[in-house]
Length: 291
Image (tube, rainbow, N blue to C red; front, side, top):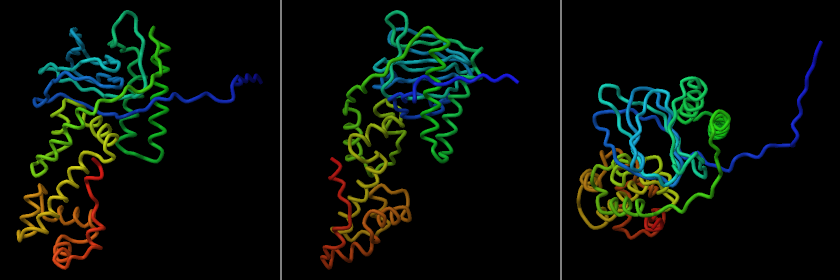
């Protein structure tokens, strides 16, 4: 009986100091608005179906099924789809990573039908892990990402480098915060807010939270709670009307959110204001602390 044994020459192989920011699946629809934008991180996406175009800097590149696209940080780009062959793809946002290609370009596309099963496995597996969020899914996604990067460099002529994350501008996040402050009573969603500043909604949520210590959706909710407290203390409006004026979709959702934020119901809060009970006021979180 033969036996062959291979030993590692090092005790351990260090993990790449990169960060997976998000995984998302995009599919073209009639409501797709193609807006040029940039990221401080690298984007990789794999076209699963259909045809379209990549608009990067001053170049337009055709895209089709089994195309892989890599876009380094700070490259202005967008994607468009053909109406008769709608494009679908999986996107990865990766912080701290930059690829080096031949020439001066900071982006690349290449057709890889022969590697379709291998590449699709990594993209699809990460997407499924993020969707199901089973135990240790973050570790699984990190390992899959590292395997994907190694796989790409094995079968291509480009290299990758780990870079320090670029300083992120707070301009977009600041605009979103100001917009929420002025329009919290309107029907706002994360998708709507992201579209205002031409950012991926997952990136906006990450950057906003990093800037202010609270997600944009939670900030919006707390801003509405703050307004409702003011109305409860200074007006005789019914609670249902206060919920509507503060931007909540229903009185039941308002009641649930108010109790979670203040520890008491809206009605109990109003009574405590009249009795000038300081204990109730102490329980309420102050959204101004996030500024």
